[in-house]
Length: 276
Image 1: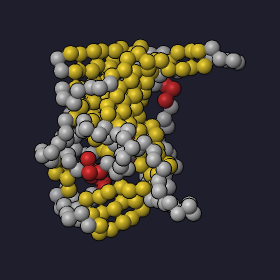
Image 2: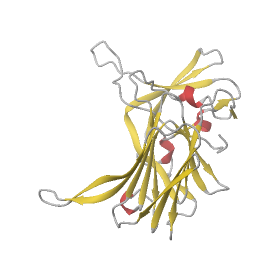
Image 3: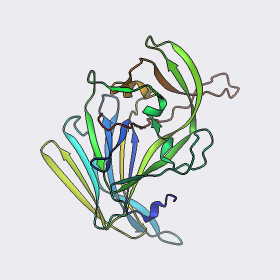
Image 4: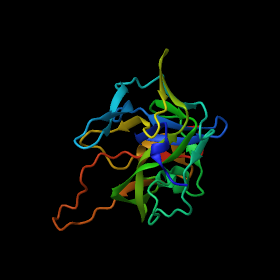
């Protein structure tokens, strides 16, 4: 099996600070979007349309609806199929064996950092203190995969003890920037709840031309950091106290600067336990 985005009715894409999990009881994927003061949540729904080109028609995307400046509390998004879905519940795209340093398939879901795998046998404990609000995104009837793998930044895993002292470093590799969800059905329904208000958009299938639902939760400030791990540790912490940072490996280009270009980068993670 491989990813063929053109067969979808709608494509959901999430970029930025968020914790992905899979709810087996509800048979859906869930994203807990962290609503702190640094990251900005935006939602954009787009339809494909033909536009006259010089030699042939060109497909462009036009906005159906956009949501910005959403409140931090009492926001929930639900996305699901209507009529003959290709996927019942959810599926996760995995392309055989996976090794972060040399796996060839950029769409493999395992490029997304798994918090449990990162900590091995050390259990993660849910934190209830100093938490920012969460916006819940629930997606049913979708195939989950890596939509965009960031190949410009190569990371190392830096282990720190409970006092913040570095105890170990090792090469980690590339990290997924955007998770994609492909939903194929007669229609896809998008519903957003904001407080006691609700808005719904029904996206009817256009053969070969999927709709797009793009959700971003990004830190656009000039002093944005590359490692989102401290943000995630507000919600899930290792029982042993040791923590990890994912920091970019800087290659010296001979200029003496040794700095990484300022690229907008916030990466989602996945956890085994949906109870975040």
